[in-house]
Amino acid sequence: DIARAVAVDPSGNVIVGGSFGGSVDFGGDLLAAAPGHSSAFVMALDPQGKHLWSWSFTGDDEMVVNGLAASSSGKIAATGSFAGTVDFGSGPAMSDGAEDAFLAMIDSNGQPIWGRRFGGPQSQIGVAFGPNDDLAISGTSQDAIDFDTGDVSPGVPSPTPELLYLARFAGNGTFLTSSVLANVVPMESVGVGLDSLQGAVMVGSFQKKVESEFGAIESAGGWDVLVSRSN
Image (cartoon, rainbow, N blue to C red; front, side):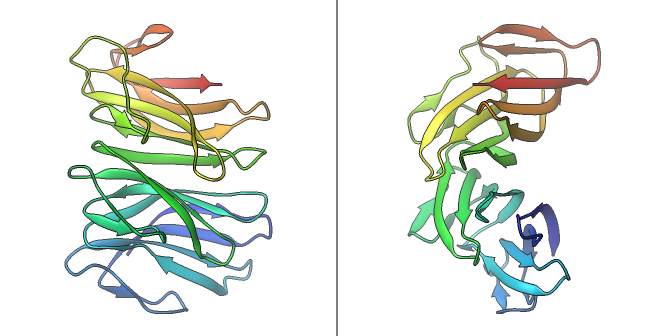
């Protein structure tokens, strides 16, 4: 059992997410993973560490929660990756290839509200709420990204096997905007945030040269810090 993400809601409750194999009991109902695979979980503990609720995504293959955020109203956003088929609470969704990213909303009692999957082999790392419960997510991809509105192209010459993406969604899961940075070598996204003007900011690191809609950014050698903002 592995914890990979943590958030604290306005009441001081601690929200933990990650993955587990076999079965696990965090203090509530027994959670069972898909046979032979790891499943994703989210659980909540009160400020004294008492179990409030725990929930696992129902799927038939590998799945993990990599990022969590809590809104001012107590809703929880979870992001990560999955393979095969998974049910976010409103019916099964199937991955488009070996592994897809997902974004899911959970209410303050641990019940699923909605879930979205994004096609293309990718890893979703960061998630954050804005002042109006809008969401920003960041991550990496090895191909064009489909946010259910068509592929998002980096608009730069090939080969560009590594992408960093930054996308925004409304609180009901509606896609708003996205931006992409492209490189020929691996990059990392480690966090995302939304400011008071609803601008989304992503931080990470890169090597060599990054291509974006604003032009190219070259590293000074080795790995460099990257900060990107999108309205």
